[in-house]
Length: 308
Image (cartoon, rainbow, N blue to C red; front, side):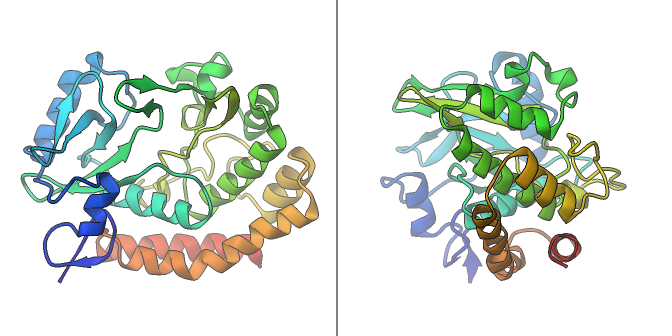
């Protein structure tokens, strides 16, 4: 019995019917990507200057062709982003996919996503673009580097306090968005995400309401890097390392974000309740056994620091 890389449920073939329906109600099967992991990286490098999506990790823009039951790589008009395997960093697609699933279990809004098989059997991560609507519609999205006048090269020149300030300055209902920011901040701490820089936060405009966009680029970088040196990409309370409950909850949640005791306690209890589900999700993920064990060790360590 196989496990579907889109729905994570047991299935007879490569993908389950439920997994395919998450992509499209019309989809009855899905062909392998017609590229190996190496070829996908080469395609990403060749197309980098033609696409609106950029970054350190190789990325490709794609469309889902229902009739052909296959993803097609395109330069323009893509509604999905594909991220192939990376030479120097192990199992990043599998890591990002399970981390995004864990975020969804935590009440964090995430776009539809999953894993695809390539020509060589290697897995590629896909995520649906949340800035596209209908066949050709676009939603206005700006990342926090753009909002603060920073660039791709200066995206680490900020702080979590400044992220909060941008929410207060630009969001229609900042109190609601600060609730989301606190949940996302704790999530990144617990899951070992050390790379939440300014370009990994965005606002989105829908019907004249500006809010935080769905979360994206969530990844346990602690188990990917050979010798991680920081816990946060942006300093919080002047610190990038050795963060404590006092920093995260008392200072950032209570003092800087102004969240009430009831709200703080609810979010903390939500994370306590979801821990077992996270562990189960990691254990059925597509990561290797070694990477699963590393991920679980990070969780144990971070939960102990936040809740002991």
